[in-house]
Amino acid sequence: MILSNISVPLLGLVDTAVIGHLSSAHYLAGIALGSSSIAVLFWLASFLRMSTTGVIAQAFGAKDFDKIKQLLVSSLLLSLLFALTLIALSPTLLSVIASLSQSSEEVMVQASTYFSIRIWSAPAALGNLVLLGLMLGMHYGKGPFYLVLFTNLVNIVLDVVLVLVLDLGVAGAASASVIADYSALFLAIYLIKKLFRRYGVIWNIQFPSRGSIARLLTLNRDIFIRSLLLQLCFSFMTFYGARLGEVTLAANAVLLNFLMLVSFALDGIAYAAEAKVGAAKGEGDPVQVRLWVNVSVFWGALFALGYCAFFALFGSSIIRLLTNIPSVITEASLYLPWLIVLPVVAMGCFLFDGVFVGLTRAKEMRNSMFIAVVLGFFTPVVLTLEWGNHGLWFAMSCFMAMRGATLFYRYRQICHQGALLQ
Image 1 (spheres, rainbow, N blue to C red):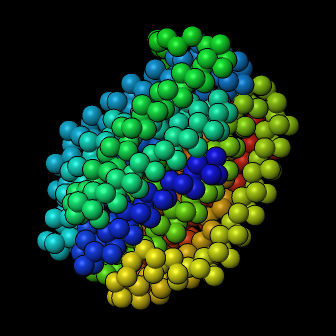
Image 2: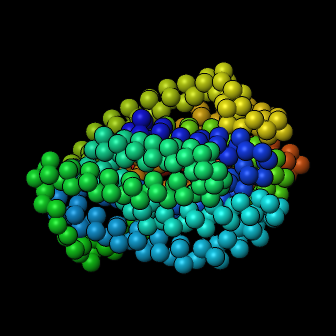
Image 3: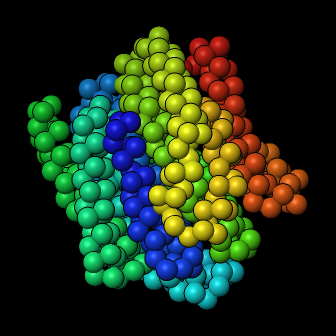
């Protein structure tokens, strides 16, 4: 899971590197605004993967394969509905993006081009989230690795061909992502059929019961609210950075790739925790639940410290790899220290997200996120307005730390109450 997740940022890194070496900062700023807006929308749909992983891991622990098929159908239908809604609302969403960012005309033209093409990958991208969640829930670690690696390889090759060879610019980068997403969907379906055959499960449609749909919708509602609050903070980073100028926006786009590297590596551990904790709950074994939580924290701390050292040693080189625009390099280097300490600060929030997904305790995740957004992000933003972009990165650090702290506190409460299996 670590290997599959750490390959995900390659997509953003290649897009940034390819566009970052074009002639002007407005290309990089435009793709930063367009791709981050798409990322916000698709990440809002992360509730599809999280809820799917949690409920299927518990059904897998209980060896209830009919329920697994019912949950799969429910989640796929929900993902399609959400994707079609995003496509229908895309013109309105573009207007909102333009209004909030107040970017220059050159930046907005590039952002609109990227967004208008990339939004058509929504049905495939969201369907892949559900199928990824199924693989995780059924402990099929190699499946997500094959899927994510294949997606990124297709995207990288198409990025090079469409942008550098055919000179299609931002439109080429967006088209590469669309083709990669749909290619991945066909591979995911093949892998799921292969996984079902391993357990002797017949590949057919199992219509869900009304009760299971109601439970899934409740779970998705709380995780969706949690995801919405999370993306509110990341969107604020992008749009407020745009108000500070295109060089700052471009620099933050480079630095957010550091955060993506951290998040996907630590999420690799968190995804494994989701599957193991969920299966242990499905088996009715609280001792195993606590064991997998402790193992995940150990490895998470080890990887977080490794990232801190890596960014301290090679952070400046990574920035220069991603862009050769002098003003962007100077601006990004100014804020690099925040990224060096962020892995340790953010470790807890990633890992305990995985624990609570496995326990299917979405309400606690929602409440924790609300506290972190209000007290951990926007309060520091207001108090440090005069710090400019430094204030934004300080607020992001506080936000990550409070998410982890509140989830850990709630986990300890649940353990003391003997309520891990509820």
